[in-house]
Structures are given as structure tokens and as C-alpha cells.
Length: 306
Image 1: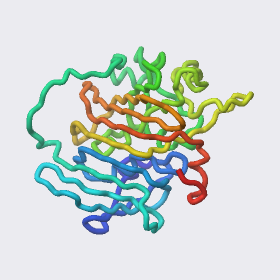
Image 2: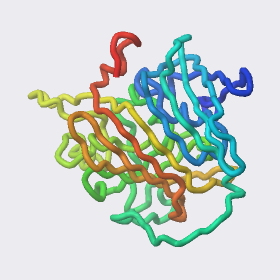
Image 3: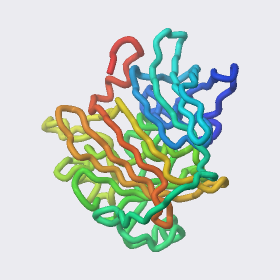
Image 4: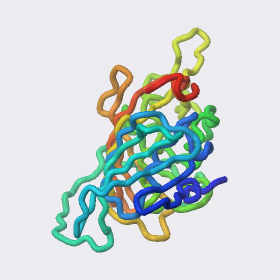
């Protein structure tokens, strides 16, 4: 199994250009998982704004960086990703860089908390061994060959169902036993049970309850045989704000809550909050996603566009 660090490694061509290669095992269908792009940037990215213009694919990629504003406390750069010698980029974005270890200034307690509150966690050890009364590990999805990137984590879901409609809570750790570092936060904010598939009343949600929170990928197609429709949820736009620096050696466990405010006409928003074991906010993220047939993903590049 290729580790996250190996999958996101890049080589400098010059001071503002880097080359990388996207691996099939870190993909969703034939398209790259968002985090594989985001993690290729340097440490201490405090904000990230990405717009996904075209579908990416397995293989070499070129990252080009342009300085926009170089400052004493923060600097902003523009980044673009191209593939296959295309003149037009597949992804464009802005990153704000800072030093999370040396930031100073006023800090105030806001008394903010998640609502409803997450279920209590007995201990990471109990969670890992299946002894936590509130959380249980999500079994491997029946569509794991399509959602390959999702198999790189172990996901633990509420044992008796999610706390509210259009909401997904989880505790996650890396499947290879590694630890989440600052580089991996882009992966973390894009790794959660799909809201559409666990929405109350869908066949997936019913199956999930019967099989101990097993989130199948897809919803009923409406056919008499009850077949599952494989779906793809490409990101159109993603914003990420990093609130704190993880330890240099990384952490084994993170809590993630994803919530949609409106799902309509094949498009949805997502608000993602990441907490550490102590309940402190690590990162915040907002997504705009489409809801498409997986066929739009698996067709050869050039045959279809998002």
C-alpha cells in the first residue's frame, strides 16, 4: 500500500514549478481525490481556495505557483494544476501561507460547540477494538473498487445512526497505521460518508441501520429489482481554513462532522468541521458539490465533462 506521503510527493522543477504523479489507488473512479492535490503544498497553509475546472486523472501533473503577495506574517500565492500538456489548467486556487507556530495576537473564548454534540468516545483503544458503546467501524463498501481513496482510512460511525438528517459524524484513522499530519488535512476534510447515501429514507440509510452503519455508495434507482445506483460527487469549489498546527509527528485520530444545508437539483453544499481528540477545532471547510452518475467519472477523458 502506498502511503499518503508517498502518494503526494512532488519534485521541484524550479522555484515555482513542481511535478507529481497521481496514483490509481488514491482515486475516486478515474478522477483524483481532492486531497491528493491539496497535500502537495508546503506546511503552514492557513487558507486554501480551490476551483475545479476540469476532471483530473491518474498520471503526471504539473503544479505552477505565482507569487501574489509576499508579506511579513502572511503570503498569498496562486497555484494551477495542468495535465497531459494541456494549456488550460484543471484546477486553480489561492493559498495563504503563515507560520502557525509563531502566530501571536489577541485570543478570546467564543464558547462555540457543535450542535447536536458528538456522542461520547470511551477511548481510542476501545474504538479500535470495537468495544465503544457509541461508535462502530464502517465495513468495506461494496463499491470499494470505485471509491479507492476511501479505503485508505478506517471510519467509525455512530452505532445507532447519525445525529440528524443531512449530517455525518465520524472518527477516522489511517488504514496503514500512519498518522495525520498537517499535509493530510486536505484529505481529512474530504473523507466522510456521503450525505446523499445516508439520508433518512434512502435504501442506503436502511441498509446502514441493518448492517451496523454500513454506508453503501449509491441510492435506489427506482427499478423493481431495487438496484443501487453508483454515484459520484465531484467538487466544484472548496475552501479550507486551518485553525491549529498538529504535532510534527502527527495524530492518530481525528473527528469529522460533515453537514449539508440544502440538497437540490443535483447540487449540494457541505460544511465540514475537524476536531482533535481533545475537542479543539483543527480545521473548517466548505464545499460545493455536484451529484452525478458514476458513469460521468469512469468514461474516458474527453468523452464527457463535468
